[in-house]
Length: 372
Ligand SMILES: Nc1ncnc2c1ncn2[C@@H]1O[C@H](COP(=O)(O)OP(=O)(O)O)[C@@H](O)[C@H]1O
Ligand SMILES: [Mg+2]
Image (cartoon, rainbow, N blue to C red; front, side, top):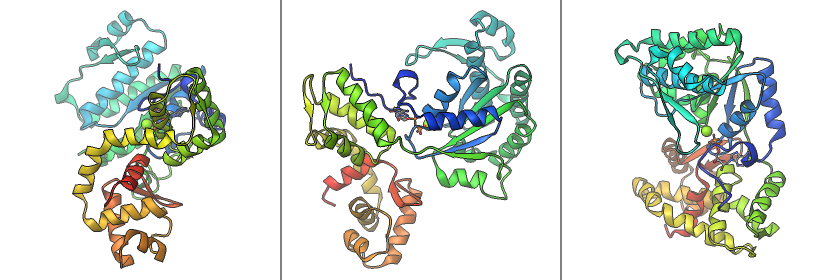
């Protein structure tokens, strides 16, 4: 069986150890310090936080994914559902949960992927006002009086898209600051939105939490983990091919796993994985993503595409340099600036201290195979 997992939260034996990050997160838990966790998509934020809290006996945790929540009703529903899973993890029987929380009309089922119990609750949609947000947070505060809690709010920036964003944010901030026994972790992949929430003095969450950046796993530690996985299928991976994998995936944890998974699929037991296997595996990823990538290109102007190709070729550090203009085949630096803004708005690139980067490393490698 293919041992490489991507697109899911990994914990336990599937989790490549990150002792410093886990210790840092646990220090924040111990000191009840609310914390913003930033990092690019698929770098491993959710996995690291779940790994840090899951096996930490001192406190229970509640996981809430804010992604896709459209309104107060779906948000409060998700929090109650997370709360019931927490009750179950704490050891409460299904019968007891159903009886104790009968007002939520809970229904239990088994998650087909994890095999763990999940719950759906039925909170009255018509009663869903900002009062119900306060009520669900009161429930958490009440629980924390007996059992200190960690509450993980994943993809927190998504709440900014709700119609009632302003009042929800102000209310959350108000209730959270009164909860002495709950530690909140706010996770987010979209740096500018997370900065808008936590670094903008006009926002209620301004400077309300300390900050942890999740960076890619260091190559040496991650290489050992990857080699071990390949060895479990009697495959040997050469150091040069490992470097090629990290380069192609721009060190993004989930993308490294995806590429390794594809390499696994195109090799057999007793194979030695050399550098030439990497482009073959990449080609398979490009093949499956070709259609959606082409649609993205169709939506862009020719000038924007050329700027993308420029970043793919020479990197996005000095985007007004002669070298960049020539790689992008653009005459004016001002056209590059305009294109970079549009490409950022489309969510194709982002900017960090090292310049502009692709959100998706394999979109970059795909671009390099196209004649655009
Ligand atoms: N510690 C880890 N060890 C091994 N793989 C990991 C680790 N953390 C993340 N990954 C890989 O990255 C993918 C994305 O992880 P996830 O935690 O969902 O990232 P994020 O929340 O930052 O988007 C996982 O499916 C897995 O392939
Ligand atoms: Mg995540």
